[in-house]
Image (cartoon, rainbow, N blue to C red; front, side, top):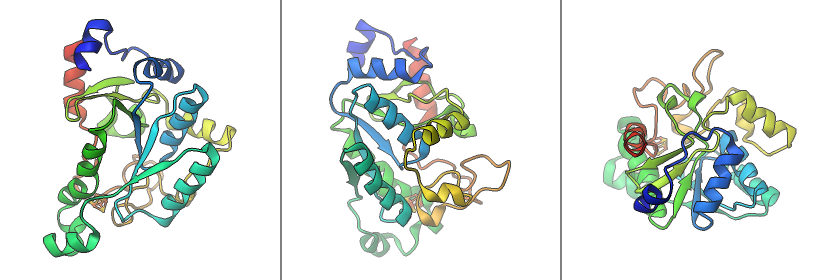
Length: 239
Ligand code: SF4
């Protein structure tokens, strides 16, 4: 796929308009495009925009077994609203097996290992059957995401990664969400700005980074499914 893209067209990371990005994705990846999502507001808006353009990504929720009930209920509501299935991808290890092999509450002692077992590995396995993948990543979503391109090469998964909202600010996401009365996680109205697994998610205080509530008190800021530096280096090599 990379050779095809290099010979026929460069990755259009210059595109900033989500509609243009999604049109390009629709032409290049009409089938088996995976939207991997924790059902955050940006992913819901990206899905809504994609469906409006006739692009139907396979929506994948990494169901770690540690998601909030509100997130699982949101998945049901989104399936009804958009009339699509949401694929719940679960880890190979149950929580009981993980505790037996690695000890109780691995997320407290080694969250990188826990994310590897419950998110990174299952996603890699699912993406091995994808033509490309899509996310709701935004440049202003976190200090670790300021270099996100609307289209970039993910050399970890060997796939093109499409981030249609890369250039949208959070306020624009919520404007679209509310104008179109799209469902969203009710925890966002209770002080949470980014919602992941319940042991590793806390509300944020005014002025904090929107991902400050994830793995609070730890150096960890990402679960590991988004390899920023690798993607940027490869995108630069293609330009
Ligand atoms: S976010 Fe926390 S609980 Fe969820 S997989 Fe990562 S370390 Fe484990």
